Length: 391
Image 1 (cartoon, rainbow, N blue to C red):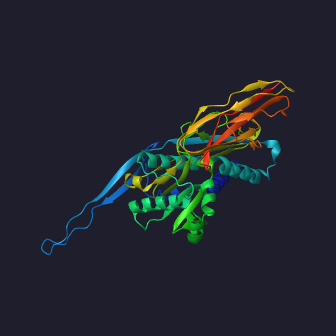
Image 2 (cartoon, rainbow, N blue to C red):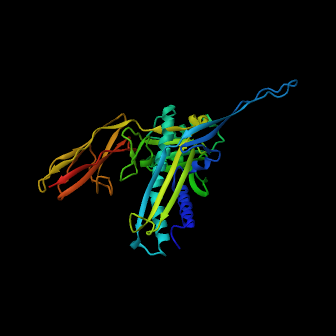
Image 3 (cartoon, rainbow, N blue to C red):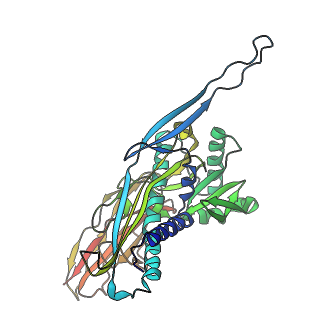
């Protein structure tokens, strides 16, 4: 049977969407899109309902009339992302295409699509909190107090009957688990995300969602070059924690399609071709803008990046350096990586200063290094990648 059947395309799309729901830290926001309506290629209408409060009942005139205001707000979708993937005909036979394609596409969604969507959604919500001054200062010695403060701020805005979620940087989450306070209050509860039921940790009914540091920044650059993907923006700050109602945002996915072509239909190569596209955005109704609260790191900026250098083999000397400024306490860790994209990064042992002495054991060729600068011992940003050429 041809791989390009409607049944196969539908099956792949459904399975990938299910994987998105299972692996995404923010996928549950897609459950809140019941009352959305598309009116154009990039426009979504989401109703925002407001009521008037109670008034006294009058025994002569009866009930005081109250208005229900339904404002249909228009939102513009921004994220239209896609990628075309190919598997050479010789890498599989007709009977093996379905399984191998499913594995490859599933891994692509898990490692590329989900992290990018999470990063975009979390950064956009954090920007709303910053813009409306809904932020608290971090207590790095007792992060539990910071979390409780955030929860109280949100509950003051929405009440105590709303289900809340707390996105927590993985480093902060590790500190939380070591605190004596959380050990007394943390429980395991059920959390529904799409058609998937998950077991999660919670405090006083607030679901705790640990998120890796790379997805907890206030701003990103979503690249449109050969490498694609996303990187933190130059002015990005780290998000330590963020609390909001589970129903506080709408993740709208207008398109999550998969097109499949056989080698006979692929005019570019003798390979199976898979075109994946996802068109999405996250929106917060006006009535919920003050229900999002965040704790972000002090501003951290790199004022001098490490630069490329050439050295002579057998006579290696010199150093790489980085300069950063922040109101918080800075720490440094240098990494060696495989290429200018930062792949296969490994810590350089003992390289914990702003300056890295170039290792004398380097052999001829190109070697790549960058520095991870951390503020308050929790999370930070990476420097540019510098190339050391040994000739």
